Length: 229
Ligand SMILES: CC/C=C\CC/C=C/CC(=O)SCCNC(=O)CCNC(=O)[C@H](O)C(C)(C)COP(=O)(O)OP(=O)(O)OC[C@H]1O[C@@H](n2cnc3c(N)ncnc32)[C@H](O)[C@@H]1OP(=O)(O)O
Image 1 (cartoon, rainbow, N blue to C red):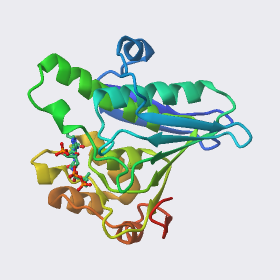
Image 2: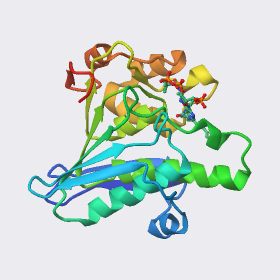
Image 3: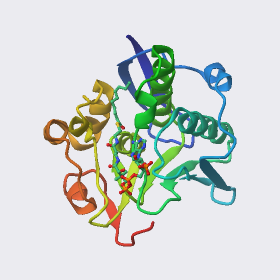
Image 4: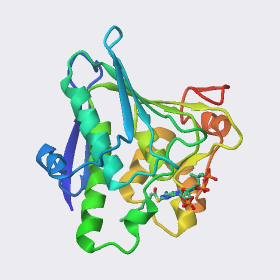
């Protein structure tokens, strides 16, 4: 494990340049992305409105938008393309599926796979985080469904979060409930947003929060009452 530096933007698209240092394996760059093949049917629909400079990335990978290697590869390639398009200033990530933002890491990617395949998958998870957190575009998660574990990480990695209010929708790093310890950089991403004590309790107990509870704990500044954002 080495130390990597992630700088956020610095261009006119992101006025408030921030710098942070994170401990993690060496990031995988574009060459690594291009080596990986994405599946034929797109798991993410990208629409860029050139009049506003806002792109919407809609997850459309049934049944639950789980973060498989294919999904993560496509996500990184799509984000990279938007990053290179100077007309794009901001990105909204959201789901095209009813009730689910993302179910988090694809459990089937972590079961019965070779160490090489697990390594590739884990690298892709890190890469998604690096690209999203290090983006020089403004990033917003419009959370229109359940968002456990890795789905929550993705939302926390964005600059802003808005969640649809629905008692059936939960968000949180709940992997403790599966007997999985959240990696320290998942934890750090949550600490950055909601603080140490809330993170400690949430991770120990594997809590999932409703939109109003999450708002109370400063996960975001607003939630919307419609079930679909
Ligand atoms: C090397 C790695 C080391 C450390 C990793 C540490 C980090 C871990 C972070 C993670 O993200 S772990 C994954 C955690 N995710 C969850 O715990 C979510 C589990 N799923 C749910 O809670 C629910 O499925 C849901 C709330 C997302 C949706 O509920 P519902 O609408 O009732 O759908 P179903 O439960 O019936 O599921 C439909 C279908 O989808 C499959 N599925 C659900 N989640 C996942 C997933 N994360 N990966 C793969 N597949 C998933 C589920 O099995 C069902 O499949 P069927 O074939 O039975 O239809």
